[in-house]
Image (cartoon, rainbow, N blue to C red; front, side):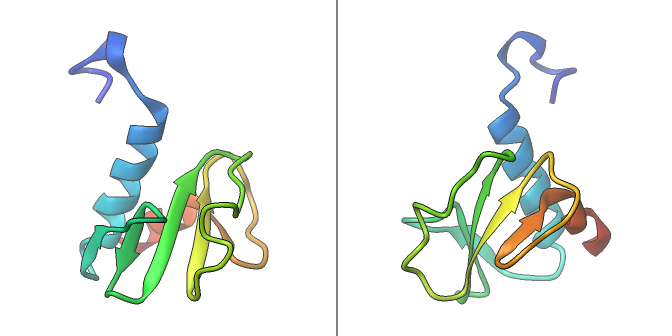
Length: 87
């Protein structure tokens, strides 16, 4: 992405692009109204950096936070790098 647009690089977009690239190989992924994405019309994911909170999806069943810049997951928080293992 930086090779095509070095001056307009958006880290949030890069995170979401990585997530979609990794999960779309094995699941049906769509945009979601409150979270970023919904997988197989059941699991809702909100993608962000290490400071991302559960605020947007706190009341949604089957919802998860996917954080960049963390090493370990906890509760419904999953490190973004774990999705690299899906491909």
